[in-house]
Image (cartoon, rainbow, N blue to C red; front, top):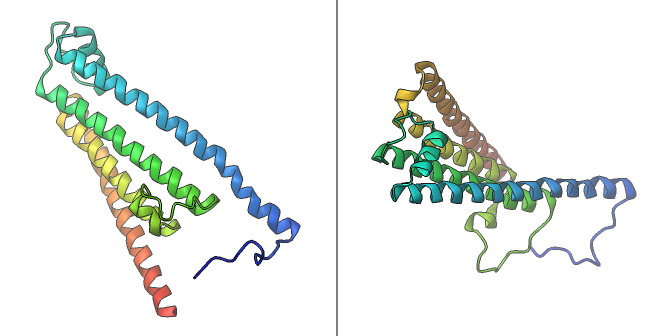
Length: 200
């Protein structure tokens, strides 16, 4: 089905046109998320630089890593060990996954709620964007949040000695809640899709 040409597009009355144009108020929000993405990129490279410096014996960088990941203090002569490396790498993966979530919200949200980006046929068009809508976006965001929660939970379990038992239980319960919420969203989306198909 080809979209109507500009000449055939019906003109909106002033009030509906004003209300429809209000969608552009979301543009500063997406620009703000792009700025937040920049902060995450900067944070990623700072942590990676500290890891590389610590690998070459820089104690200042090692202490900065220990502080950032909440690892148990082990003194000024501490050495970089496998647990610290694993926690830092998981923290870097966490940043990447949150960055992916931001991209989904920025690109998918703009395409769905503000304006078309006219990426059809572009060689770099994301595969998921070709069939994105509000329902699909919710499912993808829920899946991304579960992934981020899984990384956080794994970091907590690896560093469990530095956490209270109540914190461990609470984080596990929150992760299970995310899982159940995502399943409920996916099931609701499936029911809605089946209803729409039956209606057609």
